[in-house]
Image 1: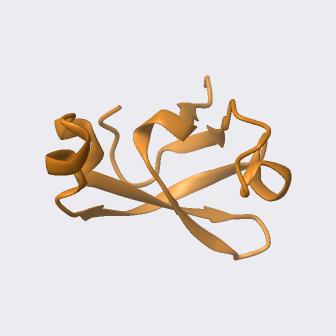
Image 2: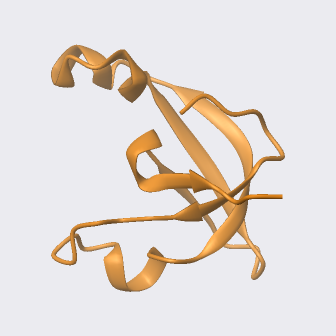
Length: 74
């Protein structure tokens, strides 16, 4: 998923055993930053080179990989 800052997204963590599932799954927020790293070297997937920082309505911010985010339809 390649999206720009300002895109509204929904967190979609499919694994209920994920430690972030209870806190974030189903929440919607806005992408406020894209942070590049080199995680793709470890995973073999270049899409993992980007973390998306999402800001929620309560001003909390959290970073997610592309696989845990879905764009919210307009």
